[in-house]
Image 1 (tube, rainbow over the protein chains, first blue to last red):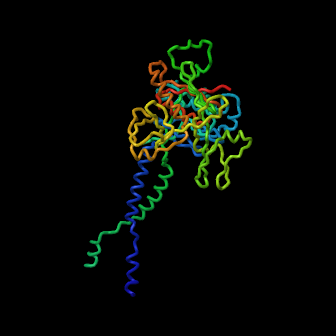
Image 2 (cartoon, each protein chain N blue to C red):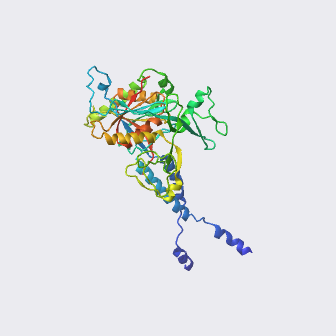
Image 3 (tube, each protein chain N blue to C red):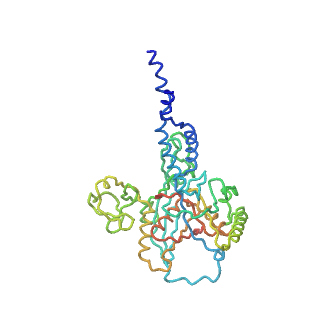
Amino acid sequence: MSRRGRDLPSVGGGLNITSMMDMFTIVLVFLFKQVDSEGNLLTSADNLVLPLSTSLKTPKEVNLSVVVDAEHVLIDNEKIEETEVVTKQDSLLVGKMVPVLEEKREIEKKAALAKGEDAEEAGSIIVQLDKNMAYDVMYKVMATCGWSGYTNISFAVIMINAE
Amino acid sequence: MAKSRFKSEEPPELDLLPIMNLFSILIPFLITIASFQKLGIVEVNLPERSDMVMGEDNPEPDEQALNLTVAITDSYLQIVARGGMLPKIFYKEMWTFRCKSDGDTITYDPYDLVDRGGSQIPKCRDGSETDKYEIDVIHLWTLERTSEEDAGTILTSLYSDTDSAYLDDNQEFVPNKQGIQVGSRLSTLAEGSRREIKPDVFNKMTVRPRSAYDELAKTLAQIHNRFIDAPDADNIIVLADDHAAFDKIIGVMDRARDAGFYKISLAKLGG
């Protein structure tokens, strides 16, 4: 009896974590692959739901992104205007967005010149809109981007048949 | 001496604790930065700044051009090609919400509620109300209307388990399972998809209200095949009214692209 009591700790001691290590290794490899293949050129904004689409296009490079959620219009994660204001205004151009976008466009042009590229090439922008956003807001934001020199406009979507 | 030699021969147990520590930090970190939804983009064409100003020297309308336009309103889709209007595709919009509390779905017709003179929006089981920005799916149920006053009857269609509508040999939608059996030959909207119905496929078929998107996809594919020689055979203009949800625009743009019109422009419906 006493001998058995002495033995127990040595049997139960030292948790066998080999199988857990196996599992963790597999999960780790899977996650690394996931992150790597993503490239993360486009990250979804937090408080909006993007629409589903059958589009197979993915962004080729990092673009300036405009996010329109239920409350705010954001350019590069900076709050610019309230969505409510955009909905109510009659003008096609969102006044507060224009100077911000034009400034960013100028910086992009300077960077393109410094690299020896064509500075007058149309600027690209990705607009992330909530899937229940009204067309009115979408059109105004689009018009503003076009006015400010960003004429290659793309909309972010969630791919349904992504491989 | 003998004892120590025996000890050195015993395989040393690896100390996995530091690795475990590393793993338990790495895994949560990677999970947070990994996104499991693959994001893509939909490109639209925008007129250049100089073109945006309406000049008086509008070019002469091209007789050969297709000038395809799809208009989206809150009750119908309208295709306009070569200046002619195709029959309107009437639909009834149905909103489906997913309750945060129990994952239950609620489907209702938003215009019905407004018409009834109240905003009795159905509530979730826990009493929480649904918000416009929480619409999960917008269904467009195709209606058949015989006259302007006719409220319309909902058309149904046979769907596969992967959500594709079936077409018969005359390129018409199959309204129900009548006359369809194992071995019948049916196609879907995808090209070259005509094949015999296998028993397992047959059992998974469902009859549901026909989606106006499918109706649109079918018509657009026919137009694309017929006017393949037009100079602007790949162009389409999507018009929508102010209240159309972004999701509907993307839905229409998807169908247009699938039909072969990949140069999509957006415009606003007046009024």
